[in-house]
Length: 293
Image (cartoon, rainbow, N blue to C red; front, side):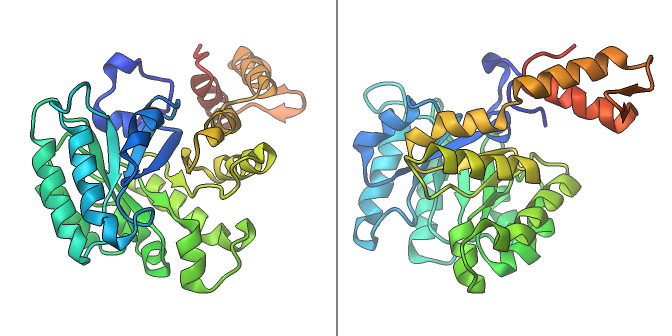
């Protein structure tokens, strides 16, 4: 799957748009007045949340508001968004899936795909994918020990677009401190599973800091260095910081240009041996920066 920035907006299919997204912004499903604002905030994709962000008593109203928002005849252009449904096996899940997939078959629907929370069962995902229109994206959100252990199987379900990581629920499940260093194994496992399955790099868990740009940037850089392709976000204020953290720096671009310039010539640049892995890394940096040679 091509990285973000390598396709023009007009050439994106729905699944390519989701696979290439660096930022994915959550908006609560019971706050329809925020849907259009979220869509205009600058995120690569929006996720309308019917699960954790919505109280049990408001689930039905949130689903109805979401269906109205993605409908092509809702009084204007539909909101284009992924939807995080309720947990598989819950009472609300069946209603979410039945009505959303019905809405997705309406020409002009704004539904981009389904985010499955607490994904653990590859068989259940396979059945869901078989029921979904092919143009929709499918994003399993891994939030438990069993989900991490089964990450390879989840990533290999045909039609899965990319994985995502839910660090807060995962830390709760394994009774660990929420600090990043205690979640290293889970992050690595999702990145490895995605790469082995040949799907887009996963989306990392949201930073719980909203206004502290330095902490948001540090969290995003950590995710990028682990091999994640983007990050979930819980507030529009996080978006520019996350985008900036995932973008190559000027120093990265200068280094990459020097490597490409030496390709096929000098054996080293600044004391570093130039072989195929180095040149390929340089090409990826330039691709993400929109400076392909």
